[in-house]
Length: 225
Image 1 (spheres, rainbow, N blue to C red):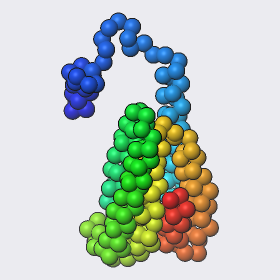
Image 2 (tube, helix red, strand yellow):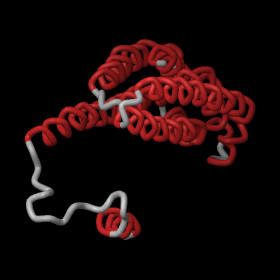
Image 3 (cartoon, helix red, strand yellow):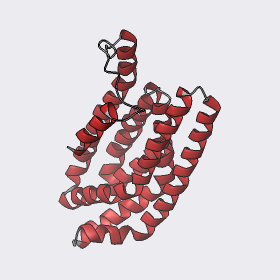
Image 4 (cartoon, rainbow, N blue to C red):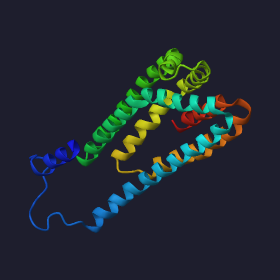
């Protein structure tokens, strides 16, 4: 309801964003539709295949037992706190780069891209240090089971080393989206996820257990970054 109210204000009340209500002014054109499909289709396919990859990861972890499976789930939840700043900066990068390119200020767009990627790497690098230090505490908040805490904390400490590289990947994707190019980052992300993470997870899980899966994740995020 809140979003609907915001859209109503933006489309009909805002002086800068309101739609032109003249009859025929909002008629879709082939150019507009093609551009929307060119930007939206790679993003949609990426989300589809990335979600499918997460299912495959869960299928790899499941045979390890209930403790590793629970530890993996809680560790993913705990880690999400650390990469939230990266997604926030990525959204800012999309807006800043998109506005700059729309205003034909490509040099400014490059400067915004450099600033946001650097900022994301630094902030999530700090978050990675905190993740390594407080991994047992974070897991302890989510579960009282010592075995789950131990395995989850070990997984988080492996992942902590990849946080700045993950930030670079996240924010760079936002930059590409702002520039209207979603095909290249989509291809990189899919190749990285399916070619590196899934493959390494399947290879390392039988011998290293949950730590092998998270080692594969760490390597993949560094590769992607």
